[in-house]
Length: 607
Image 1 (cartoon, helix red, strand yellow):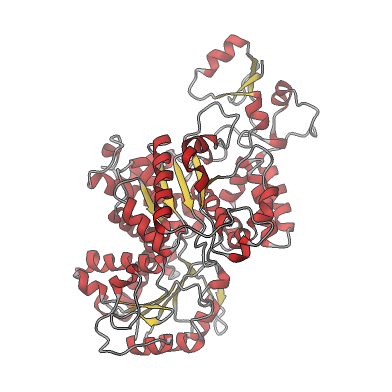
Image 2 (cartoon, rainbow, N blue to C red):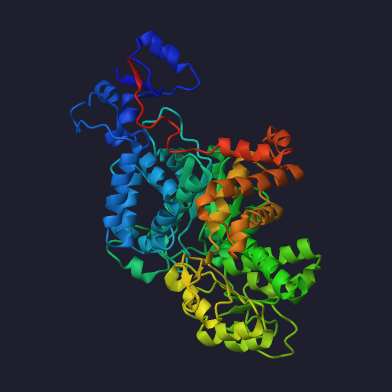
């Protein structure tokens, strides 16, 4: 029979009976030899202690030196930094995740500012484009990195879901806490990538672990592969997805319904995050499932919340310094997809909740621009359903197509880009924004960086360094030539919101996630700035504090879930009465790479 290891630091070798007794103690976890030697979770590599190696029968099969987790991390960082391209770095980290997941997260958590752009945007966009080329080389056999579902799987969908055992040697049944699901139809600003979009669910869940301490063993990335309308992939010999056109809506919604029904049947408390669906389907899915299931859409709700948070802080600055009040705000949105409209609706709620606007007054703050120009009721084209809410009826028959022309007409205080059209915030547009405002607010939010409407350096240069800026992707700091002052760009990264929102929802377990829970997450993020960060005129806090930020966001979600009477975790009702204790309660439930005694000497017994 396989030897068993009890993960108890510094214990001597026990007899069979002592091991059984020790295993009953709450601080000890008994794992089999197969689990410790073959699981990419329990694999410790060169940190495995001598006693453990001997008990597993692997003594002598690796160099004798026993290293600390810190030494392993230093070596890995040296190798990572030696890679010449970001894609090479992505592949290196993916291979590490699939071989030694705790070392992977040790590096990601400790070096988040350096690693976030490697494991997610902007590099994940390139990785997705190349997914069918790199996928076969990312993981060893028996280490699935996600669940791939197709139309053909639907008759046996529950069986297929049960097949997904990312840690097959783990004696505990797979019990995911959070799933991220996409159909690959609108990946970042790159369009329909089909099955290649799987890098997004995987990447989002990595950020859940790093940012909110979700146990990586309780995450479930899902790609619902219903085909692709991308002819390039259909004709690519290496493409790994279904080679057919996407189905009609009836077939599409039926497939999603069957998948969600099966997921909730298998995992009743699972939180599902919709990610990177086409605009029409994103809104349709949220409308259909928001109040009947435990889910949210990050592109619509998460993006909206994080941008709202940055605007809350920007509006505080211009109100106090330039006397630009809420009634003076006019916002031009360049881009009318699911993210753009979702953000606009979140900001609309801010004017209603914080400033007492009527819904109609708040709606009139927004001027939405799509590929045909300013969206108006009398433009003469058939508007998609999600665009109608903000369509203007006060244009007196005038139509405006050019963005600079629209800015001259509207005279906006705020310009937001979610168009996936690179370099569309040109020098004349940025200079005009600076003429109209002492501190123009410019948010070029399209991802990845190659799709951004402008860079931070361009926004600074063309507004005489007066811009209040946030982007969707990371840009380098900017040094003001005249003074040498270093300016830090804001990044409206969903990473600030969705980990805390998901964590708070998982802790409180509301029957569903309401719009107000999402709004409160934005308000909580806006309050996370330190005095030093406010003095630096930052719109978002330092990402190095992401777990504390996520705890604050999660606490806000929990408080609102109880206030709305939706929390199914009744224990939380007592904890929310003291916010500080609630934050501590949330943080105590965060997983860390050292949670299971990494590299410690184990007490060992034959069973």
